[in-house]
Image: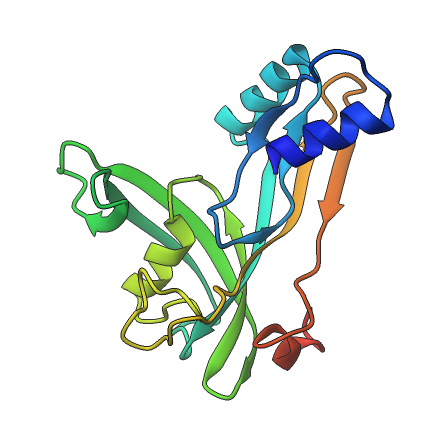
Length: 194
C-alpha cells in the first residue's frame, strides 16, 4: 500500500523527487478498512503522538462465530507475542513480556450462527481483536490463525477498520474517517446493521 500510494502522489502532484509518506496506523495483512498515512515528518510525529496517547479513536466491525455471552462488555487481557511463530497468546499479567490489551464491544446482530460486533479498541496490540475474541470462544469468521478449528481455508477474515477519529496534525480540528466492509459473505448477512 505504501509504495502504491507514493506512486499515486508522485503522479498526481507531478513531484520530481522521492515522495515522503509515513505509515501511522497499520492493519494486519488480512484486515481491511481505514488506515492513516502522513505526508510530512512533522505530521507523522504529531499523529504518532496521538496513537501513543490513545487520542485516536478506533472502531472496528467484526463477524465472530457464535454468540458472545454479553451484549456489551469490556475485555481486558494480557497478551504475549511469540515473534518466532508470529502468534499471540493470552497470558497472566506476571509473564515478563505480557502487555495489557483492552477493548469494548457491542453486539449489533446475529445471523446463521454468527454475530456482528462493533469493537472500540483502547490498545493496539498485535492481533488483539482476533486473540481476545478467540479467547472468549468466539473466533473471527475466516481467521485461520486463531480459529482454524471452525474456519475453512480460503475464507477471508471478517475484520474491518470501520471508523477512525483523530485531530488533524496542523489544522487541529477533529476528523472522522469511515470505511464500509464489502458487500460479500459474511458481511452481507448484516447489511441492516452496518
